[in-house]
Amino acid sequence: MSPNIKKLTRCLIPRSNAIDLKEFKILFYRSNHILLGTTILAALMYLLISDSEFVKFIYDSVNYRGQLYEQYLSTKESINSLHGKGTFNTSFEKFLDDMKGTYIHDLVTLIIMCFVILIPWLLYLFWPQRCPVRVDKERQLIYTWRWGKLYASRFDALNPEKKETAHFLEIRGGWGPLVISLYPAGSNKAKRVSIGSYIPKFNYQNHQLLDFIRNYLSGFATIPSDFKPERGFLEKTLVKNRSFPEDTKLNKAIDHWLAKESK
Image 1 (cartoon, helix red, strand yellow):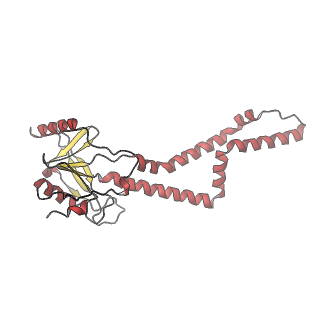
Image 2 (cartoon, one colour):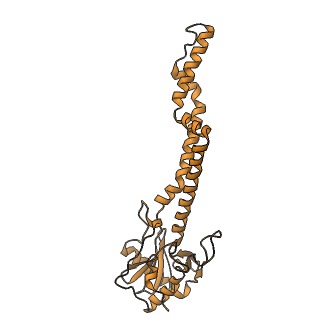
């Protein structure tokens, strides 16, 4: 029996005589980036509140020129006091060149720390989502596009695997993706692709995609006119998601794949 199509609004994107299925893995990675970034920020906030030495390290690293100027005045006063006025005649610029090495090292360390803190958020905001998996009803074909190459399969060669979880630390219960096999033209070396929504709205939501693909290709499932795809917050980033090439190139690749399959 075909699953309720309206329960798959977060997984499907209707096209003309085809359906696109979302790539699961990138959404899972993005959730990890948010978790890691939040953990690092929490640790930083704790240090800023509880560790005055760490706060002083940040201030001194950023304001190293001011710190060295104070040292310069103190050194000048001490030497002139001990050996007579005018004994210390080194300019501040020379003193700065001689002494700034340690502070520059601390500043570089601070910049690296800031970059490490930003990495998870940058990956979340600027890592584009991969090309979706398309279920082509007219050609009776399931395919996607990876690094300039078409990967495709007939339904009976998908070799599906229904993952219980997305990660070994997660509670089991059908929250994982549907994993299918897609193949380059003329090859039986499969590329395993995870499809479905992350985070799914309910247990086994992604597993229902297999029944949907079967019924959609067989004509037993149709997309209602009021079907409205949903976008989860993990899909909203600052970069354009990867997609299929223009139709001429895509059709040529599909025809090539079909020709290789028939041999």
